[in-house]
Length: 509
Ligand SMILES: [Ca+2]
Ligand SMILES: [Ca+2]
Image (cartoon, rainbow, N blue to C red):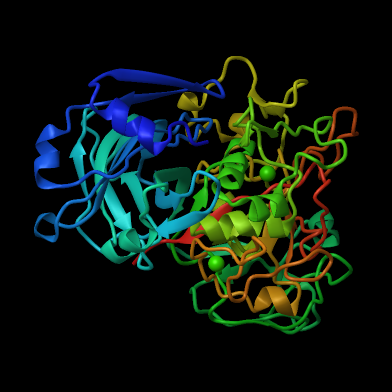
């Protein structure tokens, strides 16, 4: 999604003009200003751009790399970003995960880390109180409304960059780029897992075992470092073991992410626009390892990404991204500094801290009759009857298919892939975040992450939409929170039309 190259930018920068670039129905406005003042004190070697559009219109209007001397705080990124329908209420808030790369025009994406401190909001035209939380590993920052608010936010932020990583990735050709993705904050707190309905238990929902292995109650998560024994013993976590559902045994160690600690989860499923953006940042070899546009029936089954003029483009960037394997998805997560969620985090993000109700959907009720968010005949995820996400509130979650925390589409749209508690590989997951760099083949290389197809370590939750004409059922398109008939099925070829992904990140301390 590179829109300008460096030499153009140099020229344009001194023209003091307002430029508009049209891209995928997305208008990126670059306000070119007089930099003469700043040039007196610093060298601007490159600046600009990349905008990722999401359903609430996240826009990164403008990015500039300012090479300030150490006496002025060292290198900084200046970014103008905005999105609609942001919120901060008594329950939680949303956020944008913002991160930086130096990308070669021919592909090749190098991490530019952020500094531990020195970040600030420098312009706040809508007067929305915001804050910037920096990740301990320097992979990026969360920018979020920090006081009661509902509606649009726009901020100009200056993010202090790690000088060493700027030096290491800087070249005449590389283009400094900012990426953002909308997230939802899931607060720290105890919660309960499971579904005790007869149907839920048949579908291997989780429960607290009595001494004969039968359910005696929902299972409580009371601490992040809780060690959980699985199996038919009083007080254990238990479920009906079986193929695709898990081995029904083992220990979930202290380090396994349980959803008790605060974390951020993507507000929407990974979109085709975001996937195209990921592919564009990679060199040819790595992009080829993950491109999905050449798969059989791709365009008949909701795919929209095309390779044109050496760029991956899509005219429908907001459509959820299908036709990706777990490994494709993990490459995006590693590159973006995020990680997969666990199936325990999935349940927390769905229902929050309230006691579970049998056969409950993420919108807290037990019915899907009021759902107004559907996959339309044109295959776009659509709100019916003129609803817009600006109207979403705690009393109409079921119209929007929004979770207790306002995470969208956790049931329905595409199936959610999550690290499973149902096998040893999954239980060994410790929640390490991606570091922005892929291996030489373009694959994720994070310690402890599951990989492969029909191997182990992950599974599916929430149900998903396949194609028009499929009979509706308990998994098409929406599934109750607790059902996990494929909770430990680590399958899914790249040609699968109904499987997607979303990522999470543990909240900074
Ligand atoms: Ca989904
Ligand atoms: Ca890596």
